Length: 559
Image (cartoon, rainbow, N blue to C red; front, side, top):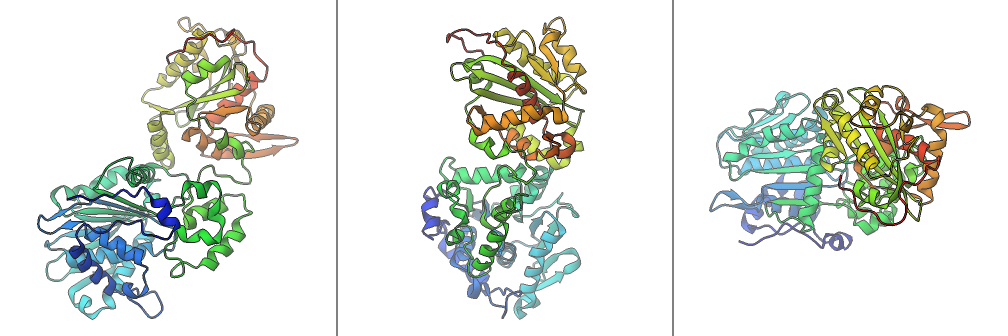
C-alpha cells in the first residue's frame, strides 16, 4: 500500500488555509474514531459542547490521521510516530485528552495501559482533568470507567484497560508497557538531560505491540530548541520536506514559511492564522494583537518569548536589554562554510584567544584570521567540556550534547585531554607559518597555567613571548567595541555555530564608567567562555600583527 507523510508544499498550503494533514490510510478506521471523538464533551467551554460542535476541521483531520493509520486486518499501526507543533492556546492538551480517551474506548486488548507523559504535575493535570471531565459529563462513560484523581488514572471497569497521566518530575516511567503514548509539551523535555532515557523506558512496551504509536504535542520553546525537542523537530521537518523518507513518521507543524520569517510577516495580525488554526475559537485574534503591541518594544526577551509561544517563531539569539551590542549583528555575519581549514587557506596571519575555568566551565578557543587582500577578520571557534559539567550543570546538559553533535564542542573524560587538543590546533597553525613571532596567543591570566605549560613545553615549542595575558573586566572594553564595529560593518565573519550563537545570547553587559564590561559573573550560570576567548584574540589582532604568509600561493592545511 502506498502513502506518504511528506508535505513538500506545506508553505503554500498553510498560507492558503489548506490542510497540511494527509488523508487517513484506512478511512473506515478513521471514521469510527472521529465519530467517538466528536461525542466527547469539552466541559470548560460555555455550554459544555462536544468536540464535534466546537472544533475546527484540522482537529478531526489529525484524529483521523492517527486512528486511520491502523490496519485492522493485520493489527499493525502503519504510522507509529506523530508530532504536532502548534501555538499556545490552540486546545492542545484538551485534544490530547480526547485522543487518548478515544484510544482507551477503542482498545481491544485487556489490561492495556495508555500513557500521557507530561514534564510537570501542572502539565499532567492539564491533560488528566479534561479527560476525567469528559467521562463525568457522559452517563454511559461514567458507568464504563472508574476515575482515580489522586493517581491520575482512568480504568475500564470491564476489560481493565487504563489511561494513566504521569508527571515526569514526580512519577517514574520505568517498567511501563504502554502501547499508546502521548507526550505533552515536548519542548520542556528538551531541557531535561535524561529525557532520551525516559522516552526509551516509556516507549519500551511498543516492541511487542504492533498497534502502538506515540504522539508528541508541543509549542515552540521559550529558549533556542535543545535536546530531544530539537532532535525530533528537525527530524519532522526533514520528513515533511521530503529530505528523509519515513512513512512511519508524521509531523504536523504549524510554523511560518522562511520567507515570512525573513520579512517578519508574522507580526502582521492578518497572518496570525498560519500557526493558530483555532483562531476565532480558543484563540482570540484581538488578544494576540493587543499582546503583540504591548510587547513589541520590549528588549528583555519578553517579545521573543511571545513570538515563540503564540506564533511559533523559533528563538535564536536572546536579545535582552542588557545584551551585548554585537549580538544584533552576529547572526548576519555567519558564513556556515567557514571551517578551520577554510580559515587557514584564506588567512595571512592568525591570532588565538583562550578562555577557560574549572572543571564545570567550558574551555574556549578562538582562531582569528586576517584575510589576504580584503583584510576581513575570520573567526573560528571550538570549546571543550569535562564530562563532569553534565552532572553539575544539568540544566544545560542537553544543549551541550547538541553542540557536541554539531562538532563545535568536545566532551573529554580526563583533565588534560582538552589542553592537549587545544595545543595541537595552535601548533598546526604555527607550523603553517601563520602564527606571529610574538603576541600571538591571548589568554585570561586566571587559571591558565596548564595551557601555558603545555604550549611552552619542549615538544610543543611555543615561545613564552608568543603568549600574552589579556586583562579582563572593563579593560576588555576596546576589544568588545572593536568586535561590535567589525560585525556591524561586515568586516568580521564567523562559522555560525549554534555554540557561539548560544554564548553570544548569554552575554550580559555592565556599564563601568565610560566603558562596558562582559564578565562571567554578570552572565551567571550561562556559559560565555568561547566569546571571551574571541575578545582575547581580537585584542591581539587589533595590534596589526605582521603577515607571515606572502603572496597568494598556499597549500591547504589538513586539520
